[in-house]
Amino acid sequence: MQKDPVVNALFERLHPDDIKALDTIVPELDHPYAQEWCKPTNNMARWRALTLRFCTHFLPESRQRTMLSEKIPPKGIHMMQRADAWFVGDFYSSNMVIESLASAKIKLIDGNNYLDFGCSSGSLVRPLAAFSTKSNWHGVDPVGESTQWASENLPLGTFNQSPQSRPLNIEDNCFRGVTAISIWSHFSEKPALDWFEEMARLIMPGGWLFFTAHGVQTIRWAKKRANPETLERIRLGLRQNDYHFENVFGGSEHYGLETQDWGNSYLSPKWVLNNLSDKWDMIFFQEGRNQANQDCYVLKRRWT
Ligand SMILES: C[S@@+](CC[C@H](N)C(=O)[O-])C[C@H]1O[C@@H](n2cnc3c(N)ncnc32)[C@H](O)[C@@H]1O
Image (cartoon, rainbow, N blue to C red; front, side, top):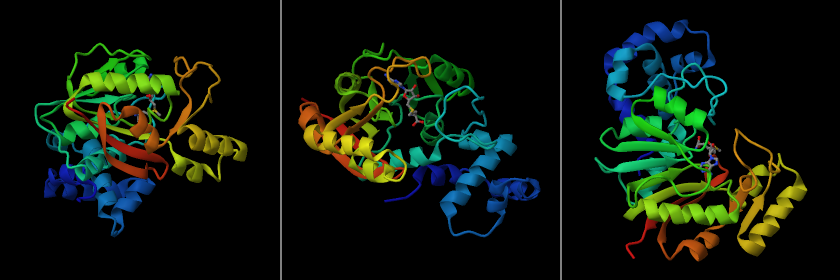
């Protein structure tokens, strides 16, 4: 399976002249990324990603070919990625989504609708919409400032504020596919089930849901940084119930959101099979695939 498919496909759209132009710009920059770009490397994916970032920010004409955007959310607008001067979107997650879908024998289809559920300020929609320009990309998130910024700055997607609880104001079977990164890692069990039910309404039969969730790998990943008692509680919760919720915000407001049912959650593939098999087939699972922490799942919407 091809690695880094999004970065590679976007890089292919650059012209040799773009790289030549960077040769006169990047060495002048006083930044570790610039120094990294100038040094010989075997890590072509990383070098290509940096090249795309520099091209997007310094060469407006390259943007017309890659369709990447140079806009950076200002301080105060939510984004998970560390913003630097050359941010163009979340390449890591977009590669992870397309690689996982490819493992499940799924390709994006022109003319179809796709949704990023919990899109924040559009970091993932940016590279996916550039990668697949003939599909329609949507993002929803309950934090209105995030979707408003994305709406005003990212012309390739359509972004809307969503309610914290279902339903979304979108018709049945609208989407061929939905991505949700670090969303089911936060719901308590009831809203987790409710939102899977809502996805079954929104995703057409044969369509797919890519999501990430904390699981047992998170316990190993967190070993050095988390309180051992908390980790033991999570381990027990997962062993006994296959689902565990930690109310980490204690109900206090977070980005203006209600947090009684939004904290840190942990679930197992067994929980997914036991609870979702009536409407979904699990067609891909990879433990810890997201940042060596969260598990990745692809579910396919059943026809029945
Ligand atoms: C950990 S961030 C992940 C953001 C984005 N998916 C990413 O990976 O960069 C969680 C996101 O979920 C959003 N969120 C919070 N409650 C939600 C809900 N009930 N439904 C959907 N998204 C929610 C937050 O506003 C935030 O943007």
